[in-house]
Length: 410
Image (cartoon, rainbow, N blue to C red; front, side):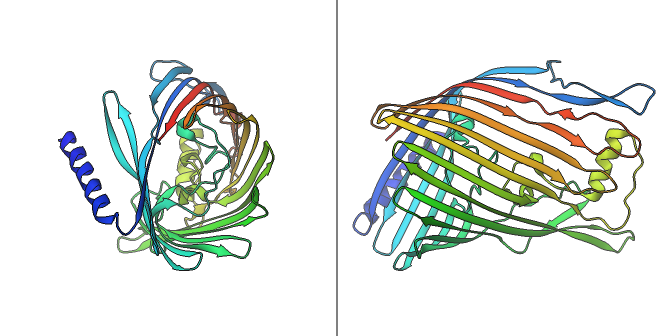
């Protein structure tokens, strides 16, 4: 069945080329990427109550094999390996791109990008389809974790999503504005329903200072409602989850050197898909339920239920040097600070840091070997513990990796 599907896919693509060749110019491309990395992860700590007391200590967190560290070797085709094509015409542009993954001798194909652009005016276009959203600027070149690029760990990232967007030249730069499919989460509220009516909004502007230097600003907003039953059998209640973000950065090149900084701030960013799930906000009721389960307290909800806002400051810096055409060096650092609103005297904080150092070795045209070493510090989880309870900060663990990415573009 899989062979039949692939055969049909090739036939369709060939037919499209034959029909479209007279009107548009097609250009195929592909990239195969294999990750070969050693990883060593410290699983961190967890709280344990001292028997017979209301006090806590931290103990090693263990996996299913009762180990507090996990070591592995990654040796696989990266999930961002791809094949695709760009299409250019007088008034239309388009792209399709499929990601290819491997599982043993098998694999899967998934759509990474699929969009068309109608050039309705000089320098302006209407984009419809799935593509990177406006807040995405590729600054870091980190290769670990399927070319992670410090995304979500220092660098703002909107991912590839369905959207209706307008983009074009405005003054000395480029403006992008998009309405995007929403990211939704019930924030741990039991027996609830999520209702999203308004699309997510993002916008960015990149100002070209010169051919080799630019600065950019960006922002976004999303809102949806979490609805759940009220106190009586026929009543309902709900709260709104409002997310927003704002940021700025630069891409500065000085001959063989480059400097790429960026900083961004978020409220409930994970609820809109701009941050990882570890920073997802929660409802006040779910937050108190978690505190009560952890500390054995009996806190109750005072007032109406609502969102306990999560606030994040994220920043990154990439520094590079390319002494020759066949060798480049890069160092990067990412930071994510996290803090919740204080509720009934309880607040949660965390600071995440990530570092990497790499060399980009060009073996031939389109052939690259990129050794890289890096370290992720998942930080210490700090909680303003409930009344009279003493608990230390919790070490969330760390990850050390070393290895290389092998890449051939064609």
